[in-house]
Amino acid sequence: MSPTLGRLVPPLALALALAGCSPPVAVTPTGGVPPSPTTPLTPPPPTDPPEPPTDLPTPRVLVGQISQGGNGPCYGLINDDGQEFALYGPDMGTFPTGTWVRVTAGPPADSADCGTGRPVRLIKIERVG
Image 1 (cartoon, rainbow, N blue to C red):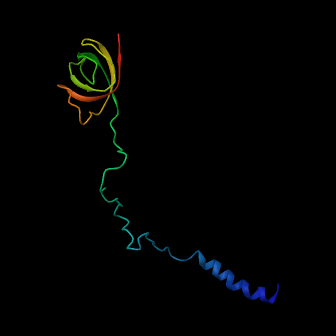
Image 2 (cartoon, helix red, strand yellow):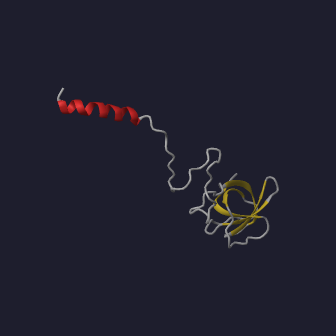
Image 3 (cartoon, rainbow, N blue to C red):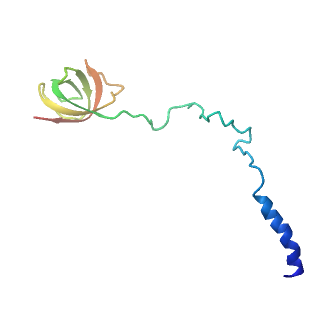
């Protein structure tokens, strides 16, 4: 072994041995005090609703008989349980009163008032039976 290498090995070995012996250091991303291990981290409350909304309602399928017919955009529907719905959907076609239909319905349109019953927006409507 060369004299220079012989002088470097002991300090290098000592540095490598001590490198794994240092205590852990708490580091926080904000530079503040690290959180207590018993306090759960919670995000701050939102200031605005998310865009796009994350809680969109799932479309429902309704089956029933048209109680207020015509060529739209408003229709009335009574389902098998006797519940009445006020349907809104432009360009959905003509459905005479008494027609049995299957409807895919979404949340009501804000600007539509289609009469009595629970308001829903038409996504799809088709004749059945």
